[in-house]
Image (cartoon, rainbow, N blue to C red; front, side, top):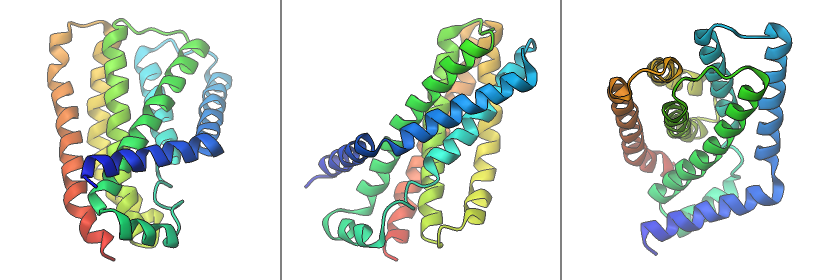
Length: 220
């Protein structure tokens, strides 16, 4: 079976399992709605656009950690052994990245619309902000999937996950906040091409590192 077919089969398997249990979707939906509601009770209104933007990305960041951190934990040792016998490590990590990207895009759309309904939406360029949310979703998915894969091979140590994710997430958040601020202010889209290119480069580098590193971890 080719790599593409293996990835497609594994992604389909994850989607079917999630559709049957709906554990991740329900827990994410509850987390996002409850977090936004708590923020509303605390602030009532957010008039400062910079605070509105920062608060949104904080909510999305922690929601993504809850959604993706257990990507490999939920796989039992017996199931991993079965995967080891029928497929390769590259297909495993790629399928997890694709599945988590789909999950994160869905999560981000729920978070954005819920956040916009409860708090007044001050976005000046809705399309550019949507691009920022989309790139942020993909970036969170690729980074946390890679870190989750590494952490799963070190006894699912949450400390290892935090240490590995911190150097990547901080610059990623800085670029995302800058790009989304440009969208909030309705600036010319040409100004934001640099930030978009940086986000795309981060995703390409993260996926490449995952494909190079995970096969060595998979052997253990």
